[in-house]
Length: 159
View 1 (cartoon, rainbow, N blue to C red):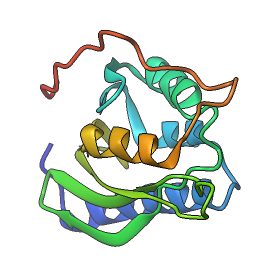
View 2 (spheres, one colour):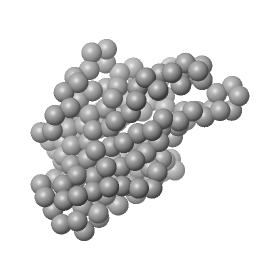
View 3 (cartoon, one colour):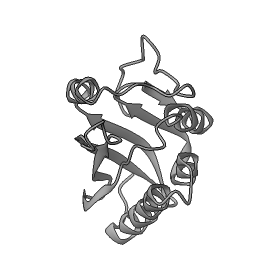
View 4 (tube, rainbow, N blue to C red):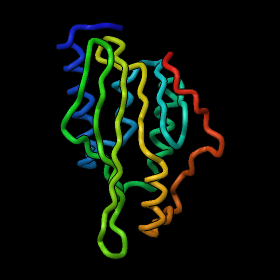
């Protein structure tokens, strides 16, 4: 849906405010539900395609278990046109035995659907880089960690 830039900017600012509250541990990832339509599609590099708001909320709950000491700050810039928003963020692993926190670059491509909501989010992250950093850091999942599906749906098409 093509929309006035001011409307998309307002929706993006609200989304970023929620993400920042999550980073401050004031909200849980499921709070992002308010920014997506009921029929939204979310693409995660590890979990694959997730369709529908209830499934997306379930994904946020499961995929972030055991990662409470990870950080995902937004880097402070976005790019947008009359339909899409790109949000730049960083994934920061917890400190390793030497206190080193490894970082990976991430990008979310979101499509604005109107009414302050998005109907598509594709998170882009180099999983080879992530896995290399996890091994180098000696990271081990916590007991509550939920592993992504073995064979995720890799369809990244927009609805």
